[in-house]
Amino acid sequence: MSIAEAGEFGLIARITARLESGPASLLGPGDDAAVVASPDGRTVASTDVLVEGRHFRRDWCSAADVGHRAAAANLADIAAMGARPTALLVALCVPPDLDTTWAEDLAGGLSAEAARVGASVVGGDMSSSPTLTIAVTALGDLGGQAPVVRSGAQPGDVVALAGRTGYGAAGYTVLSRGFRTPKVLVEAYRRPEVPYAAGPEAALLGATSLIDISDGLLQDLGHVATASVVGIDINRDAFEVPGQMRDAASALGVDPYVWLLAGGDDHALAATFPPGVTLPDTWRIIGSVHEGTGVTVDRKPWQGGMGWDHFR
Amino acid sequence: MSIAEAGEFGLIARITARLESGPASLLGPGDDAAVVASPDGRTVASTDVLVEGRHFRRDWCSAADVGHRAAAANLADIAAMGARPTALLVALCVPPDLDTTWAEDLAGGLSAEAARVGASVVGGDMSSSPTLTIAVTALGDLGGQAPVVRSGAQPGDVVALAGRTGYGAAGYTVLSRGFRTPKVLVEAYRRPEVPYAAGPEAALLGATSLIDISDGLLQDLGHVATASVVGIDINRDAFEVPGQMRDAASALGVDPYVWLLAGGDDHALAATFPPGVTLPDTWRIIGSVHEGTGVTVDRKPWQGGMGWDHFR
Image 1: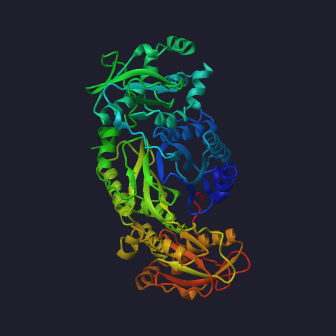
Image 2: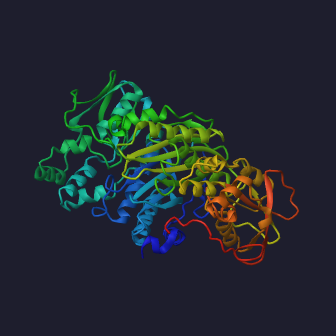
C-alpha cells in the first residue's frame, strides 16, 4: 500500500505499532508532545538529518538499515557528551508513492537501534516531500556528570579512540564501485557499530574532551584542536589496517589510511585524557595534544583529504 | 553568496551569529549536542517539519516569516501539554544554490519567535537537499505540573478556546488566489499569533484535556474526542466572523465558517475544563463534552470539510 493510500493517520498508526517504549518514555507518541524523564535536571539534545541520495541510497541500504544509521548518528552525538541516550524524535518526509512498509521498517530500525542503549522513539512528525528525508533528534541524560565538550583538551593530554574507523568509509567506497562485498565493510556502512557506553565511561575516566567521529577522524579532531586552542598529533602506527580492509583497498586502488584517518560513518568516539591516565580496553591511545594548532599525522600535515563538507 | 560558496562550516558560523541564547541553554550550538536545563526532571519534546511547497512558499513568506512559522508550530505543541518551551533544535536541508542570507534570516526568525517565550535555538544540523526542508524540535518544562493530554475530557466538561482560528486559513486562501491583502489575514498566515502562555495557564486551571489546533479546530478536537472516548459539540454562535474576514470570504466566495472551524495554521489552543470552572479572558467557551463519539456543530455533523491530511 502506498503512503498516499494509507493516509497520514493510517501511516502514523502503522509506524507507532513498530515502536517499543523505553524506560525514560513517560508519555510516548500520540499527543502534541512527548514527555521524557530527565532525572539529572539537564537534557542533552542533538539533531542529525539524513537526505536520500546524500546520506543514504535505497538500493544500498534496506529501510531498517537506514533506521539503524539515522538513530546511530544521533545517539552517538549524545554519547559524545558523556551522556546516555533516553529518547528519539523523528521527522520523516516521504514521497507519497513510497510503500508504507518502507516507513514501517525504517521505524523498526530506529526503534531497534535506540533499544540497544535503553532509549526509544517517543515522538515525531510526518510530511509528504519529493525528497525522502529523515531528521532525528536524540535526547540524553548526563547522570550527574559534567558534559564533556570539545574545548577542554590540554597540551600533554593523550588522544584515545573508542570504536573503529575506516569501516564505514570502506563500505561506502565498495558500494559506490558497484560491489556488495566484503560483507564486514558493507555492513559497517549500513549499520554502524557505535561504542555508546564509551561516552559516559570517558566522562568518568576524566576525559578533557570528547567528540563523535562522524565526518572523519582528522576533520573532527580538527574541531577539538580549534575549540581547545591546541595542536593534535596522530600516530599513524596506532592504526593497523585490518586484512579485509587491506584487500579491498588494494583491489579498489585506495590508500586504506584515507579510510582510517579521514573516513566518516563509523561514529567512533575520540577523547583526550590527562597524561598518565589508565584506560580500559575500550580506549586505545592514538596520539597526543601539544601547544600549537591543527592536526598532524606523525608530526606532518596530512595530504590524503580531510573528510566531508555537506555542500561541496 | 550561495550556500555552496560559503560551505557547511561557513554557513553554520553565519547562522549561529544570528541566534540569541536563552536562560535554559546551558550549552548552545557548537558541540556534539546541546545541554538544556530541565529543572522539572521531565522534558516535553515535540518535532514538526515544514517542507517547501507543502507548508510554505518562498514567494508568499520571507525567510524570517518561515522561521517564525516553523518555531511557532513547534512551540505551540509544547504549550499544548501545559509546558513552557525552553529550547529549539533545527535540522535545515537547503538547495546549495540558496543564498546564505535566506538561511541567516530564517535563523533570525526562529530565534526571535523562540525569544518571545524565553526559549532559544540551542542546536541543529544542516545538509544540502533538492527540497528546502526545516525540521524543528522543541523542548519544554512542565514546571511541576502534570502534562495535560488529549485523553482526559469528561462528559459534562466545557470546551474552551484560547487564541483565534480562521485567520491563518483565510490568509492562505487570500495568498493562493494571488492577493496580498487584507494584511491582517496574510500576516496571520505568515506569522501565527500563538497564545503560548494559555498552555501552562490551562494546566493550572485544571484543564482535563488540551490540544494545539494546527490542522483545524474540528479535526483536532476529533483527536480529543477519540482519545477521551467522548463526543464534543461546538456552538457555531460562539464564533463571530471578524469584519475583514467576512469581507474577504464574500469577495472570494468562501464560507468563513470553514476557515473558523476547519482551517489550520493559527495554532490556537483548545481545552476542556470541568463544568462550573471560572475562566480568565484568555479562554472563551465554545462547546461542551457529552457521552458519545465524534465532533458535531450545533449537534449536527459538519459538512464543510475537516482539515488537513498531509498525504491527500
